Length: 232
Image 1 (cartoon, rainbow, N blue to C red):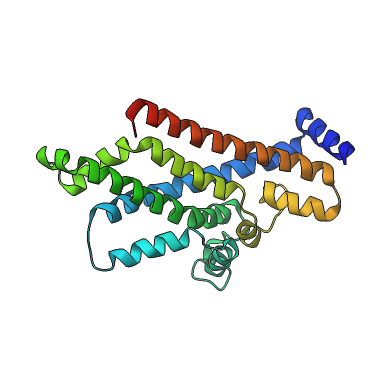
Image 2: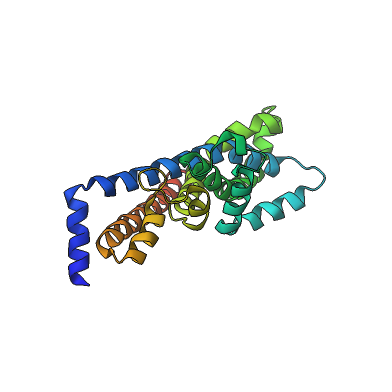
């Protein structure tokens, strides 16, 4: 086992092209998913926080429930949409990085939207009198509240990125784990472990753990910075 760990770290330090390709694709897919999911999740979460409409409580319950959406279910839904017989089959997206971005966005959206709703709701309770006295309507208050809660919202986005980069079931279903095309860290770890290639699997596992620690460190650091500077 010690030899396997030593070989894994030697592989990381050598800058192996296959290893870097897998890590690079993982980061591109996960960061793209966070970007596209946040474009919709941030305004949706803020709107649900500020506006009262029929079925609002049901929307909140669904968003909270979907934070735990099983990845294989998300993968199955996207697979059915993108498969040849599906409504989007003609686009030829199945087993491509784009399909992986779509399924990861589906997983991230409820996390970011639910956390945004809670953050904006808390800020609205704190600033409602001040904002309304300045003539800011609820729609006009949304950009202000999103900006004021930016540090907490970044933490929500980091939580979404952590979910995406560590996901394996959904991306395996829609990506297919094709070498050089759709092979990311999690699917490569599963494959190389089954093949008995522990060196590459451990190297990828070490990088994935390092990324996880960095994400948590960033989230903790942003939370501390926000509390010290703004008392939030």
